[in-house]
Length: 229
Ligand SMILES: [Zn+2]
Image 1 (cartoon, helix red, strand yellow):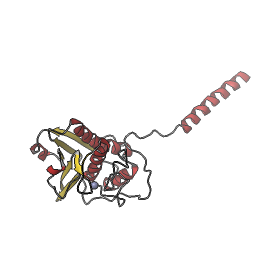
Image 2 (cartoon, rainbow, N blue to C red; image 1 turned 90 degrees about the horizontal axis):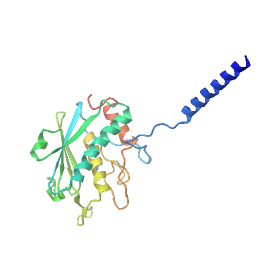
Image 3 (tube, rainbow, N blue to C red; image 1 turned 45 degrees about the vertical axis):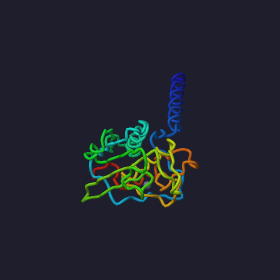
Image 4 (tube, rainbow, N blue to C red; image 1 turned 90 degrees about the vertical axis):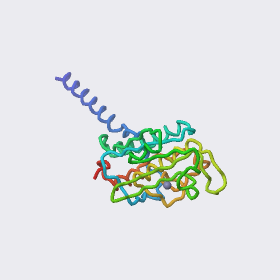
């Protein structure tokens, strides 16, 4: 009788230990996004368009003189948004958003999102008014025509100094522009957020991560279940 009592006490202790071990284990950290850390602003404004289709297909054209790493970083920016949305909404089957390489500008035309990586900002169709990465989205009766223009070689805001972007700055602008493609606008703060209009790569030595701030804004636009209404 006594033996039996100790046996069940031991079992109960093991059970208690297991449940407390489970209780104290931290939540699994997100891989593709971080928690919002700056709370000066708590909302990313949305643009005046949204996608309404199950899959968004982006294509990337790059000038032959631009090193391949810029293509890879741009493709990774698209993948990062997709994976962050899937992880944040715990919905791995939706938010289909992919990017592939095309060898000519003409091949971009059949793609939902047309991404150009030019050798120089002087090749931008919006030059000379556009001298840094930018995105243009035309909303024609709910049919979106989205074009993203990137370059490793841009003009500084002073209007004079030409800059070779360090990789973290190029990657930051690729992620930022794809944020516009998905329907996010600019923060009021000039700098400091992923969707701020400026990125000072001397002051900011790391690219901004996608955070719960941007993801919350996208869920407000699309809901929890992907791009399709
Ligand atoms: Zn912008």
